[in-house]
Length: 156
Image: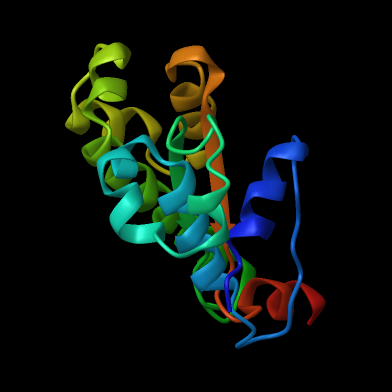
């Protein structure tokens, strides 16, 4: 089913939270949104989306964002371990983002090793730091929780 029309609707909101039960396509929707919005996929747009709603109704905002996709970790059993894994996973996703978008790392005037060292265990500050270095405030963060594990942990 073509969900590209719904991904385009994300542009109408500064923040959006999409809640669905497990196995209802959240990860696929996140990947589709990344392909639609991330500057990395600009040259691949026709290949990726030909025949889909987004291709027939192409918006200027498509492939104009620097997209950071964060996948939250599975439950680690206790709050201390979960928090540690949370920060480690988010940091790993940010490192991947910087590798995929070297222009951002260049604007930060620090190397990857410095970034990791300066922000170890503090993924929130690292995220804020990245956001201030993205051109034209074209920063999009997509968060994919892994089958409700974080919510299950917090509920229990």
